[in-house]
Image (cartoon, rainbow, N blue to C red; front, side, top):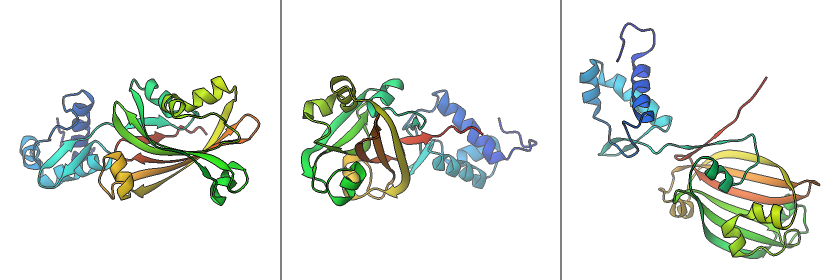
Length: 240
């Protein structure tokens, strides 16, 4: 219940009440919340206070609004820690989700100067360009494009890509993947990205570039990914 004598702001108390209902499953993804007026009347608080609580929960990803329809419970975001180097497939399995991929492009192209510089190969050298829509329980989560030197990793096929590329590299080619660096920035979805991810053009997305390295320091791949910001979040644990 709302405690008006508490030093905790009323809007924050309401946020926590709604979060508990969501976490207990009493409010499920897609459920419509009662109108602001009903919350205000139930707890004897102002509609402005209710609106602030709703806005905060929208910003945190618990709720979303549809113009003219109301406020709804959002799908919970998938959390990924940034401490370890794992594949998308491994991440989804660890979370009890069914991983999947839809191949958008698989071809060999000459490396541009930018790609060649990242992979430390000669400009125009052959590279695989592999674009996939990454799925979790059949829901699009990310559009991922890998660039891999065809002289370094030989024999990649569509079947291998549709299974697990990391498993092929480590188990079949006996190469050890040891490290990666990532850069993450915010952006908005282009029309093409929106079409692939089943979101609206201009929706917030996370742009992630990953450079992955083998045991001897050789660059293995350059990965450019577009993640849905409404379904994915990254967590960093830091120690002093």
